Image 1: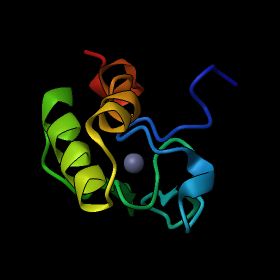
Image 2: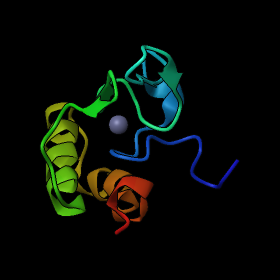
Image 3: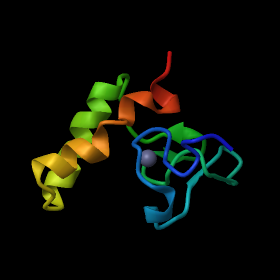
Image 4: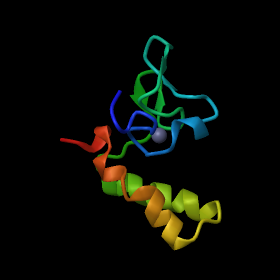
Length: 87
Ligand SMILES: [Zn+2]
């Protein structure tokens, strides 16, 4: 278990906030690495190629949900460190 195991390694959402409690692999089994909003049947649901794109996307979602700019920064600042965005 690594330090980030409790967070989706794509969008940074806490896994306990994921209603489906994890995405699904190609064979349909659950994975705790990515959330159900990012990952389905072994593939990412978005076409993002960089952490910046994910950060903008998540910030937009948070804004829709009514979060202020400080919270939006706080919830997205760790996204570039997540496993998906390491190259
Ligand atoms: Zn996610």
